[in-house]
Image (cartoon, rainbow, N blue to C red; front, side, top):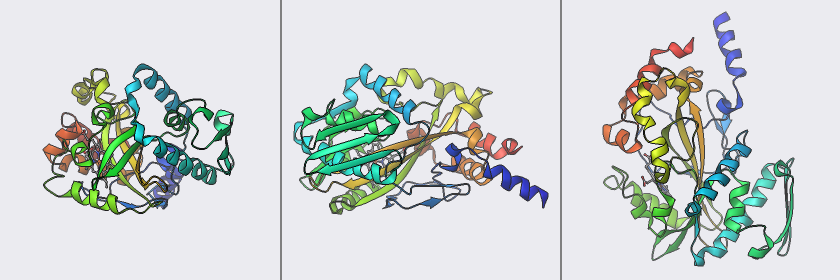
Length: 336
Ligand code: HEM
């Protein structure tokens, strides 16, 4: 009896980063699938919840946006907008700002009268008047501006010739891929490096689903990988900075604090005016030591890592340390 009470009260005081974490595993194993579901639905986890709204703002807001700013200064190729996508960027702004204001009325507000807009974001002491569709009315390029307001990476896919083309975006937190390399590619080409998905028709089914989305419809899916350190920018461009850690982490005594489960909540939205597909990628990092505070997460993730087929573990870049991580999680030492 007393053990149950102790455990419950321990779970009740877990920090927000754990209570709000979108833990992605329902089972003891994981396979790829076209896992899409309607957006804006609250999901209860063992210790909290996530997903009630579209744009999630959390305790890392300022830190991540400062990180993005520094990355863009170093490497401007992380943002690209092909000329025909200009109106789609405005469509994104017209969709996201009102949604953020509605979800966070105590800190944000958006008013619109014709094309005259006012955006207030008290987190940044920002009170901005601008004209919808007029690039010069914003303090910076519209895509860049959007990237200063939300933690999500942004990708815009043009729909033509019965497929989708990655023709614009601002991606500073890519997980082991290169936005600059993928610009101009089709949906199928982008997924070329992913094992299994072609043979299992996952990409073609996902593509058909996305092409059928109606203007304004919002869906989402999750994806996951692992990262050494609290580091969001693991893009191909910076591989020399983070790649070598993959080879040493298994023997690092501080592995439980350094190794993170990285979950991406990805939104898929057909923009109402341009018909362009907006793909938002919001990345969350949680160290193994935090995951271990939730016994069912510790067990599930431990089993998922142990069971994951080699080709998927290789693609995700976790093959050299997944056994060490799984052994540590399943040893239960963490539950002490
Ligand atoms: C229902 C829709 C989608 C499905 C089912 C899907 C599926 C997948 C899967 C299974 C992976 C491998 C992930 C991993 O093991 O870490 C992946 C990777 C990726 N996906 Fe998607 N995806 C979808 C939508 C999109 C969209 C709209 C984009 C927009 C550009 C996109 C861009 C990517 C990229 C860039 C990668 C990494 C590829 C690389 O290694 O270079 N995905 N996707």
